[in-house]
Amino acid sequence: MYQYIKRLIDVIVSFFSIIILSPVMLLVALFVRVNLGSPVIFTQERAGLNGEIFKLYKFRSMTNEVDEQGNLLPNNKRLTKFGKILRSTSMDELPELFNILKGDMSFVGPRPLLTEYLPRYSDEQKKRHNVRPGLTSLTAVNGRASLSWDERLKMDVWYVRNLSFLLDFKIILKTFITVFKRENISGDRGKFMGSSQDSDAHERKTT
Image (cartoon, rainbow, N blue to C red; front, side, top):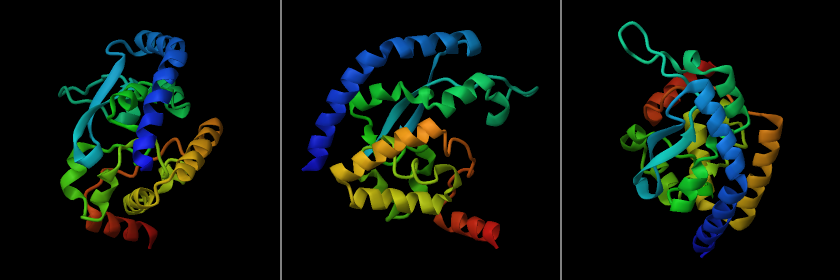
C-alpha cells in the first residue's frame, strides 16, 4: 500500500520541486554551457523498476576529451574542477527530478545502475529492481564510496524488504546531512562483474 502512496508523494514533491528549483537549474545549465559546452544534459540508459530500461538525466560534469585514437579519456582526466563542485553538492543530479515526475525513479530507492549489469545479478540481487530506483538511497548515506559491490547490493535488497515511510524519511534526512558535510562523494569500486568475481576481489583486497 505504501508504494502507491510513495508514488503519489513523488509526483507532488517532484512537480513543485521542479517549479521552485527551476531558477537554480537554469543557472547551473548556463554554467555547464560556459564551462563544458554542449550538451548541457548528460543522458545514459539505466535499469529501473523490474529491470526496465530508461534514460537517466544529469547535468554534465565531464569534458569530451579524447586520446590520439579518438577514445574518451578516463573519467578522472575529464572531470573538471567545476564538475567536481557539481558532484560534491549533488547539483548534477537535479535533472533527475524529471525522471521522478515521469515515473522512472523515486526520491528514495536503490540507485539506478548500468544496464550491462542486469545479467550479472544473482536471483537475490535482482530483487533490488522490485522498486523504483532512487535519487538517494540507503547506500548513499551509509558509506557509498567505501562499500564493496556485495555490501552495496545486499543493502539495496534489505531496503526493498523493509520499505516504509519511516525508513524513507530517515534516508532523506540523512541525505541532507551527508550532502551538507560532503561525505562519501568520491570513490571508484570499478565495474560490477558479478557476485563471485566481486567477492574474490574484495577478499584479496582485505587479506
